Image 1 (cartoon, one colour):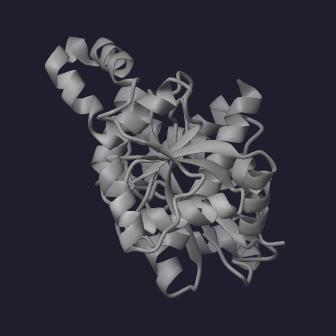
Image 2 (spheres, one colour):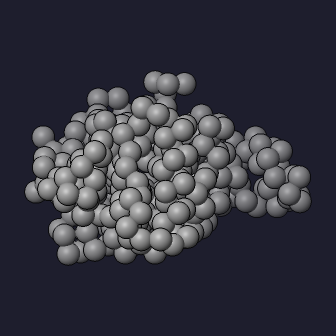
Image 3 (cartoon, rainbow, N blue to C red):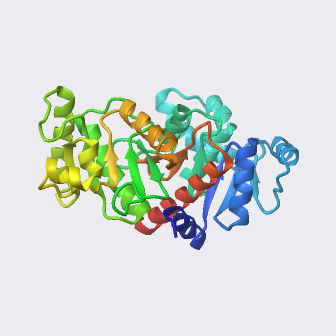
Length: 336
């Protein structure tokens, strides 16, 4: 069984309520139908009822046994208006603005998640990452122990990346443009937790740089080195190496030459990139030239799982993110 098959099986074992707010998009509709058919999750579509049903008819999607919630007709609207106003009033939001915002499917869906009427949300097929993340931060909130929301991709290959590793976490590929050392350490800690929860592995973290153990001197290198030291001080038991070049992170023979005493030993399964330039280029190279499947961007650091999509996604991508979101929700329900 592949890792993705395992995630899907875990989602099906305990279906969670996943809300999708871009319900007029055919990709979302097809993913919702397939997820429902497979027992992957209880899907809730949020959108204007007449438009959602018309889109489903146009694209040949059966909406039988899929819940649809219309923000403009819902009995929850007044309650959600009060919740949003309480959250945003200090930022200048008026009662009228709160009511208008609740009428938007993205905001309504995220409020369903906050209020416990859904276990996870998926958006971004139509909305920008900035809209999805801002909405999630403002409504769902950030975990107290993780003062930074960041993102990661699950990268999958039929053939191993190295040794027997066919799945890796790449972070942060989508949000934090130029993290400082504290932020880079937070990203590493969150990504290690994501690897443990979703890959079912002991995280082996590589803090990537163009330098390995002082082979180059530069402020960028110092940032990665200090971030690594910070992670070690916060979580001494975590297996981590840094600063380290990519080849020493994922090739045991190279690691033996460059970092002979490394606990990672060229078998990293979590790659932490020094900035968004490097991370975004790396995951797309791995996907396009390396033949890997990229699942994400997935968000980490929120109080509840609210995940983003690439606007270039297809129905299969959405289906996979639904599965991952469901497993994240299961883990949260277990620990809360």
